[in-house]
Image (cartoon, rainbow, N blue to C red; front, side):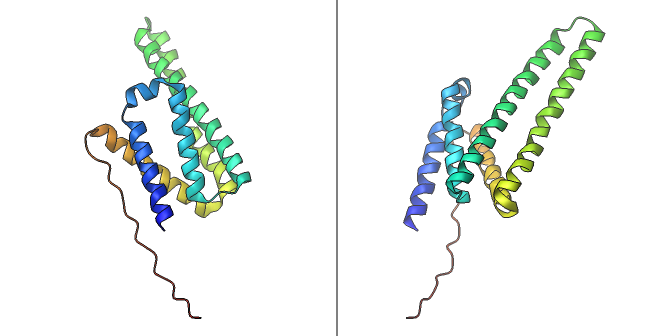
Length: 165
């Protein structure tokens, strides 16, 4: 029990530490990779993945994150190109290109579900989505109010088992 609390505490402190310099963090591939590795480690631990599952999970997450990063960059560049377009026809072309990239970006989330469900099964996929949402909410809360302390949610303890000898 104490081991689980210790792991959760270490994870929250590490995540909090990594989120403090978020502006610099976003610029650094090395730091982004560290956060990705931390996320994969924590998910593997939470989902109790075997070494084979963890290897496949890591490959899926890294591939999807790379696609998301590339598409996000294309989306940002698309907005710039739309703003710089001189003619209505060029603006329309850039807008259509942006729309295609946006659709592709959203498809990555569908691809994530399609690839993880066969690997993890329904229950662990749902657990993955819940944990991912929790992390996302914590990051958003930290970005909205960086000075506020992070809340540590206490999970209710399981009912003790009585062993009769």
